[in-house]
Amino acid sequence: MKLDPRTWFKNSSSENQATNKFYEQFYKMLGGYYTSYDPNRVTYIDKGYNINPTVYSVVSQKSRKSSSVPYCVRKIEDKAEHSKLKMFQRATGNDLTIQQKVKKIFLESKAYEDKGDMPFPMEKPNPTQTWVEVIELYNTFMDTTGNFYLYMFAPTEGMNAGQPIEVYVLPSQYTEIVLKNNSVDVKSMENPISHYLVIVGGSCVEFEQENVIHVKLPNPNFSSNGEHLYGQAPLAAALRNIQSSNTAIDLNNKTLKSGGAYGMIHGKQTPLNPDQAKQVKDRLVEMSVDESNLAKITAVTHEMGFTRLSLTTAEMQPFEYLNYDQKQICNVLGWDDKLLNNDAGSNYGAYLETVRKKVITDTIMPSLKLLANALNDEFLPRFKGYENTELIFDASELPEMQTDMKELVSWLNDVLDRGVINRAEYRMAINYANTELPIMQEYTVAQNTIRLEDALNDDFTIE
Image (cartoon, rainbow, N blue to C red; front, side, top):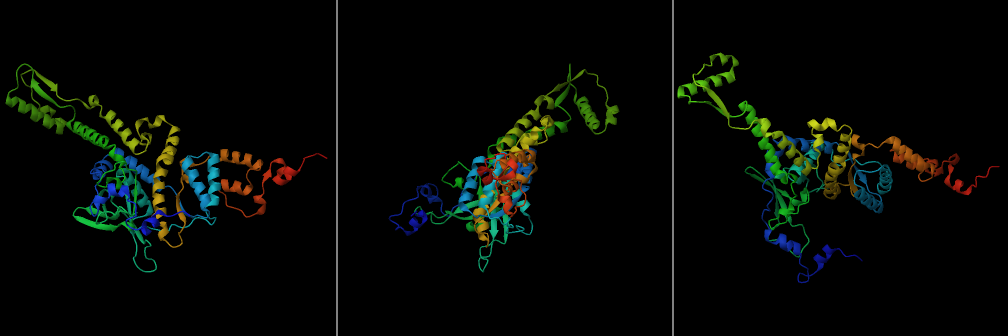
């Protein structure tokens, strides 16, 4: 009989309980206190997403694509087959061959109930938002801060106690984690988090730990102040590139406003007297406002020259630096700079289709999987009738992920003719409606399209 370690902790006497070394190291001295987090988390949004065109373009493209991925809720029928399906998905990822796609369909037919998809338990998250907005905010906060907090508002009493009636996205840049009071019990296995605090301006609101879903990216920065309780912000690694990009844009604007390189007008042989210098400056100012004022510029008796004191925009090559920063920002966000409408994009042609598919399989879907796992563990089980169900994001319907039907049908015809699959499974593989006709369950071979059993017993002697 396999023992549940939590049961052992609860039933053992205090003197015999083992000490949780991890809790002792990282939580014992933090009870009742705020935990600390990346101090630049507001900067990633204010100086990154809000004003940096590269950060905004990448994050918004990812967010819109994430919200376009179809999702559904399905009831798990066979846990063993479901486990096989999960292992298969982990091994193959989201970029499947035709054979793997067919195998996935067969595994899903065994793992889930064949009663169609269940409706999502909440049609709308709250009166002011849609689920599309929630998913886009999820992607935005994960890209900028590495954390996503979803507050579930639920009644505490009555027959629907604990069942969410509304959900809200909390601003992750202002959310703090607070541990339980009186130090964390190092001889327990309970959740050390007491609650979450959202601090905006002078207001502070507490959200119960059991009503907040926290999704976070892996964070290797462990510390005694609880930093490891938060996710690692992807933009932390690109902060200097964001600053460099913003500086380059600012300097370029200043250069354009100046009308050219900075310099100084002077007399070549003898210096201009104050009246002459003022007259030249006044006429240049007038000229910059109205070119007709060129006629008002008077001549001077001294030979004059111009000495440039700064580099021109062409000499500084700010766009080379901007391109470098753009690539680095795209790299940390798992995106491809070829999708940002840059000048070289037209040279890639059909290759862009491969790039679009790659960012879906390697970036969009793994991120949505994190969200699905959190909702499957902490959201769906709160609704009656949704026990043992699973939220699934399915990218197979996206244009970039479409299977070559000619190639699929060719492969299916081959295995059908060899008696590997039957016609019902054939229909399943091409997403046709299931049929209950017994004849469609028969395995046949190409020879006169007869049953496999008859083919094995027939010596095919010609009379």
